[in-house]
Amino acid sequence: MVVYEEAKEFLEKIPPFQFLDEETLYGIIPHLQIEFYSKDTIILEEGGESSNFLYLIKKGAVKITLQGQNDEEILVDIRGEGETFGLWSLLEGRQQTTVRTLEDTLCYLLPKGKVLELLDQKGLFSEFFLKKHISKYLDRIIKERLRSSEIKTGLERALFTTRIKDIASKEVHTVKETVSIQEAASLMAEKRIGSLIILDEKETPVGIITDRDLREKVVASGRPISRPVKEIMNAPLITVEADRFAYEAVTTMIKNRIHHLPVVEKGRLCGMLTNHDLLLLQGISPLALAQEIQNQEDIEGLSAVARKVVPFIGLLIKEEVPIRHLLRIITEINDSLVRKVLDLAQKELGPSPVPFCWIVYGSEGRHEQTFTTDQDNGIIYQDPGSEEEDRACEEYFRKLAEFVIEALVKCGFARCSGNYMATNPEWRKPLNIWKEYFKHWINTPTPEAILKSVILFDFRGLYGETRLAEELKDFLLKEVSGKDIFLLHMARLTVQFKPPLGFFRTFVVEKSGEHKNELNLKHRCLAPIVNIVRLAALENPVPETATLDRIEALKKKGHSLIKEYGDELAEGFQFLMSIRLHHQYDQIVQGQKPDNYINPNHLTQLEKKFFKEVCSLINRIQDAIENKYLLGRIA
Image 1 (cartoon, rainbow, N blue to C red):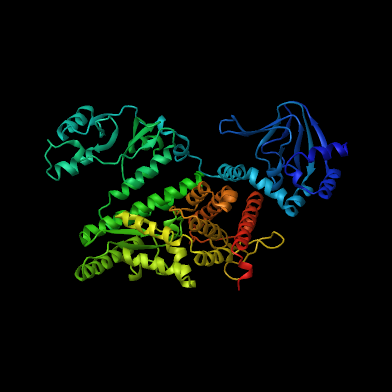
Image 2 (cartoon, rainbow, N blue to C red):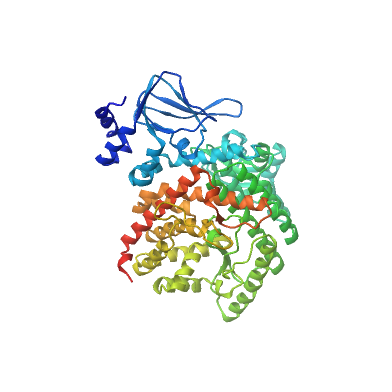
């Protein structure tokens, strides 16, 4: 029997019940049950019946565990007085963990019907569980998918569980920058190694040479072997921390097109990681795919390799690689393809009349590509010094753009339906013209200017003289600072597209047509988050383009909305991207063309609940933006 005042006193002290008004609190107590469980009692069992209660621990403690592949017990959490358990089992309709008492334990039990009523009607109650458990919530969804996956090979899992220090070679060979190329080559031959770290006079690592440098910079060019080794070293030295995971080394090596990566610990050189180490670790590797891309000599060969990308990404998806890391790997592989196409284009066309930078924008610029990625690209080139040079630039970059766009189509990258590609003369211009574009859009924010800003302001330099892209980025961040009218128009766009959640927390779906009972995940859910974070990145200018990177940068700068909601936005964004990627890969496996339309009824109860919470979060932030910019008062 529940003692009324005792229960009230308990509830008033623990979140989220302490957030409830007195009338609601009094209405809960008659529904409470109280149960005693002796030490080592299983209250809920993995694979057993789902919970019909939310358990509130009045006294004692419980441990929550999962069963591992070899029947080992994996500890998920320990919870004590004032904490709860059983919520996710109650919501999703099945029990995926075991809850066992660590000592004699006394619990209040709140029935499922009352819990669902509170979640739907009491915002602070629901928001507490979203904020407190959101990371565990997402992890549970991932575990659910992993447990039901048909492929559990572990080929790629090693990338995300192995520390670099555990696989890197501990022996690192070094030479001073003043020794001759001949001495360095002799040492490499004697030790049978493929690289040497170069030290300055203070014994500080400043560069690296590899056997490839000897071939290309000495043998092929006829450079005297008596010259100092510093003349052929690669600098500055790119390194990785020993305590990082192997996948971070993979992305660094792919991005920088290197096969030897020095490992440091607290600033001191402690090892060397090679492509071979990673291949031995996995048996299969993104690096192997990137290397195969680099080995191609023509577009036909490159196109054949590109067809391997989708199955490879599919393997990573089935292995439930964390979304943040998966997006980065997809980006680096696609970037490798684009860079190789540009290499082949320049090989055919010869050197450019002036330095240039190939830029990408849209989802490609934000490192957020999926299986339906189209092309969003342009060319920035150095301002010509004469009319003759100007004509030469126009002709050369027209041919370059045509070559690259056509080659990328053959490699599976669709043309942009809006023609935001380098084949459009508007998007291959000298740096001063690009600056004029940006300045005009910011100072004359017409609907067309805002649309172009949304697409093109997420740009990054991918190939060539990236300093040109960096200069344009600096110009943009300075130009937009303090431009309140422009930001007002961007804010209006940001709140224009609402998430698909109705007044009674039901999903708003298409009522007829090809996508009846479905909703557009990209346009209705992901785009609002991207727009919210982009607006914040223009209000407090940061150079990052990726949504997750922008959130981290803005949190450090103290942007008020991102500081309050940033973690939830990041988790929500990753959850939605996970749904999107799984959906698209399932379509590909079934021989369908991937799209962004999902039927929310095909989601699990847990996914539906989280989906609704993310939509509610977007609504709250959009309301805050409307209030900040007084959009309700502007016609």
